[in-house]
Amino acid sequence: MRTATQHRLDAAWQALHQWLGATLLPAQCALCGIGCPQVLCPPCRAQYLGLLRPRCRQCANPLDDMATLCGRCLHQRPAYDATVTAFDYAAPVDQLLLQLKFGARLALAPLLAELLHVAIQQQPAWEAPQLLCPVPLGPGRLAERGFNQALEIARPLARLLDVHLQPRLALRMRETKAQSSVAPQERQANLAHAFAIAPEHGALLQGCHVGIVDDVMSSGHTVNALATACKRAGAVKVSILVVARTPPH
Image (cartoon, rainbow, N blue to C red; front, top):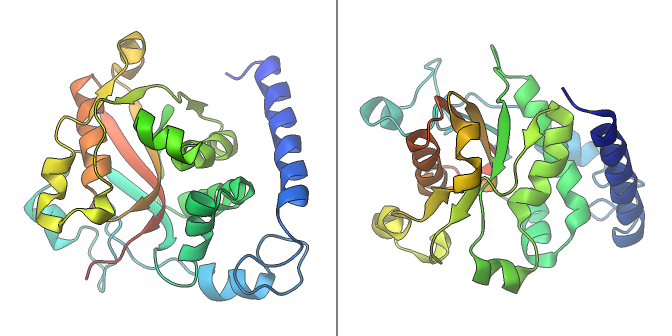
């Protein structure tokens, strides 16, 4: 149960985000640029984010039929048990994540968390995790960027789900190359032994259902490596909560 102090902190954080949104974001749609008091205008939201497509329940890759698992997950199950995503990582909605990640438009994070929350609510037989864990950045990448976009999304998402957030549950043990810069056949090796669970938080994972939060999921190697570390530490279920999913080529 959340304490009164936690609820007061949540209210203060929400007020700060609203102030930042009014201060840092112009009064125009983040996608089409039309004058709009909201971050997204209703036509863009309806056109680009209105419908959820059928997806593999485990990795969230799009499906063309009524199957619940894609062929890849049937052939080789990943370490995580389920994935929920809000939309495909494709133009024009990919701009929302690019503006957050590389433009430091942090006031977009609550919108992305809201879109992900809507997708979660539409999942049949949804089972909420007991704990949220953002994918951590390495110290060098964090110092360079100044923030962790996964954590910025996880904060408002935790409030929407009323689930405890543990920002320092996982550690990135070594700096890895950005997955987008690594050849597909080398991406799994790039993340080998990249993550570990912080010793002081290991007890939290015993018998726990963990939700891993990230901005974009492409090959899935990053979240799979972190899910593996969580299960080795005692987690019994891992769900991936990712804003956007890169469609397979």
